[in-house]
Length: 126
Image (spheres, rainbow, N blue to C red):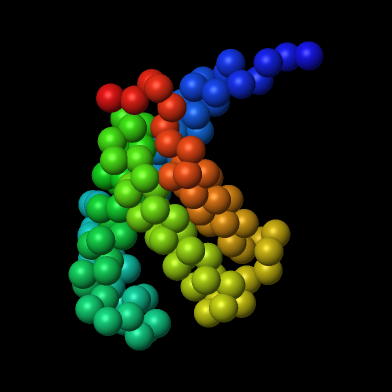
């Protein structure tokens, strides 16, 4: 039987890289236009939509970098999970999307972020 526990740090590093690269990729367009989501958030009755739009930009882009590096893992991953919970709920309840063609990515990223928040980034962090 293979001792999978001996690969724990490798798997945690790979999970961090996958989550981080995904958020950097999706956060970069938002960083270039940090208030681009303001109108959509205003339509959803968010308080101070411009601030939330900028916060999402920062959480996604900078959070992706922090996750890869292993900085403030628990806090960063909880912020990412909150971001994905909100994105999934918007798609599910506001846009009435179905599971397989709507918000499965958001839920998958949410739970990956929660797992990293719970188990940490492993030994290979800065």
